[in-house]
Amino acid sequence: QALRRESIPQPRSPPSLAMRLSLAALTLAAGQQTGAPAGQFETWVMAFEWQPTWSLADCGKSEEVINHLSGQAYANNHLSMHGLWPNYDPAKHSGSKWPQFCKGAQGDFTTCEHSVSDPVCQPSAAEVAAFNTTTVWQQFAMEWAYSDLAPHEWSKHGGCTGWTQDKFFKTSEQTYTTVRAMAGPAFIEAHAGSSVSPSDLKAAFEKTPGLGCDSCSLGDVWVALALDPTTLLPTTAIDYADPPTTCDSCAAVKIPSWQGCSAPGPSPGPAPGPSPAGQCVKNVKGPACTYDPKVSNTPADPCKNLTDCVRCAHSGACTDVPLAEELFLA
Image (cartoon, rainbow, N blue to C red; front, side):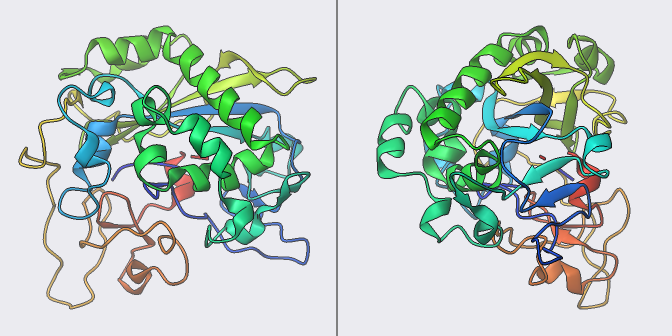
């Protein structure tokens, strides 16, 4: 299963991790704090995605991004931006690992947790015009440019900074550029189209990264960053706490080039059992589902009706792995 703290609307942006509880609209389950006060966090995560791996999951379903991903596309051999996420020191937040859908100077983003239809959830027309260009989102953030990751990232994470949209989008772009030049991301891009050992992949990073694989194809790369306590701006890389382990059991981690939808994708795994409802089995891809970022991991997720399944993953299969364990997005 692909891990991502969020599966995008691609979210692919991922859906919310839990239901809001309490009159204060704070959710303290599964690691996140929904409705948290903006501007109060201790670290960052710069989340990258490997677009060819992500796009294989969309073949035959949602192909808006695929239509722009050719062999010459920047995203074919460079890491793409998933997002810039404020993160917590859990010891300072009753065990919560990150804030999401916060409340602050830019608005109340709790309304965006299950739907981004509210105007507060959406990037303004001016910001879209400034950033959805051939040299910015359309180059290194295709899920923002051609799918609906932009409103998800702004409302779930950007709203927790307390910053304006312009500052959040500019800082995200600058951080993407800075972190991409670090040794670990540079190693990944240098090996685009080939395979590497999990140990060599980890060793390329100066600090422990978060690495997520889907059937041993690299899908997600998360780099934790310290911040300036005065400006809140990201600074130097730090170890990623509790990194996922989905790449560790692979003999080799593939960093695939885009070969189109005709190329073999991840193994679909066994077909659902004789029961019409099917079931999820540990370490095996579950029954097929249609990923919808607005439904996945919510009470309306159809996978929750299957035995031992907890959500529909972006890979298009039900899974028994909670989002909190995949962290994982933030």
